Every structure is written in structure tokens, then in C-alpha cells.
Length: 272
Ligand code: URA
Image (cartoon, rainbow, N blue to C red; front, side, top):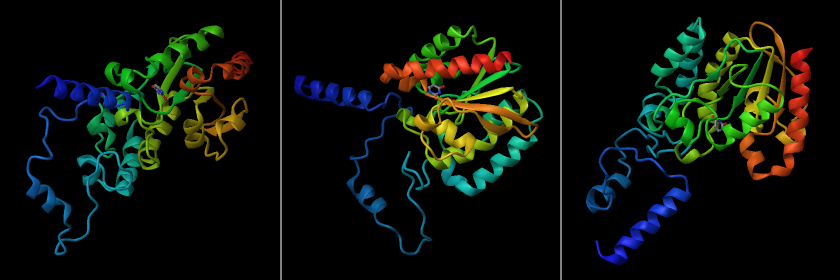
């Protein structure tokens, strides 16, 4: 490669990295410009075939990767409900989830990120989806926002041996993008069953998407944080509180004082 092409390639890689593209999806690179004719042919719909949606990775509602092309979203959500219901223990749920192919995110993630902490804990915290560090380690909240979460927990005398942590979506969305509503809906039966089996006394939703998905609320996190909601685990009604996501607090440190208030209220509720 000439020096010019070298620096262009470096700039392109830097751009990808900044955009969150930090993983390759195949062992071999594919030169999609090499065969102009096949690209042109692919782009033309065949009028003799039933209409189908093109498989564009990460494009909601278009079929996504191979996994979702094989399983339409409604079927996947139904399969997820059945599969989640069949789990009698958290270990069984993890094993079932690991085999579940209905969510396209599984195809691009390195591994399942099921949970961390103590499943017997009174307090369960649920985030949105794993990021890069979580995808590498296979544990939720181990990156920068996880470190902040650990400090917030330590401030009220807790650590990972006294809380249980999971996410709505257990596979990392490519480039850390937000999970689509479809992906969250497919994964929802699993996290609901996980909460039911862990049976915590208090549930904390980390961030708006977690609160909206689990508590069925429409309002944003600024309005709902710090408020107590009722959550039916399937076994009983427990108290649930939305609070700011640690990743948001890293970007907006002034909001930490509100999160601190929330954590004090959680501490009080745990001792009550
Ligand atoms: N953000 C989340 O919502 N979950 C994680 O596990 C990490 C970052």
C-alpha cells in the first residue's frame, strides 16, 4: 500500500472505531465491489419470487441477519415466551437462552451476557444491553459505566455479592447501538422470567429503556426516576424504581446528585 492509501485506510478505520464498529463479523473480508454484475443483479428484485425483505444487518424490520431471516419476529417472540416459561431455574434459563436463535443479535455478539452478582440478593438491577466490554467478558456492567455502578452501590454499602444484575437484552447490539423495539420484545420474556426466578424484593431499572420496557411506562427517565412503581414478578408484587443509567451519569455528572438520592431511597427500602 502506498503511504497515501495507508493513511486513508487508517482514517477509515479510525472513523469506524469512533462510530462503534470495533468487531469483524466474518473470518474473511468480503470485497463487495469486486463483482459489479452480481451486486447489480442482487439489487434488482426478481418479480417471480414472493416479496421478501432484504437482509440488512442491524436495520430494524428488514429481516436483519440470518437468525432473524429464519425466524420472523412474531414467531421469535412466541418461541421466546414458550422457552422462557419452560425454565425452572436460573441455570436452566441461561442454558435455554444460550441455545435460543430467535434474536438476530446473537449472531453478531461474541457471547451471551446473562447476569452477574448474587441471584439470592434482595436487590436486582436491570440495564439495557451489554456493550463492548461486557461482550468480551460475558458479564453485565464491567466497562466504564459498570465501574461507576460499583461505586454507586458501594456508597450504600452494597457490592456484587449483595445485588443481582442483568439486562433487558443479553447480547451486545453491533456498535453499541440501541436495541430495536423488536429485539427488546423478543428478549422480554427471558428477562421477565429471570426476575421471577431471582425473586428480588426490589427492582431497579437502570435508564429509560429498561424502565419503559419493564414497567410499561411512557414517560422519560427524568420524570420517572426516584419514583416507586409496583412490579408483578409473576409470584408477587414488588417495589421498582427507575434511576439514571450510569452511562448517562458519566456524560452528565451533575445528575449524579439525583441518582444519589435514588440510591439512598433504595437503601432505606432494603432495610425496611
Ligand atoms: N450498559 C447496560 O445497559 N448494560 C451493560 O451491561 C453495560 C452497559
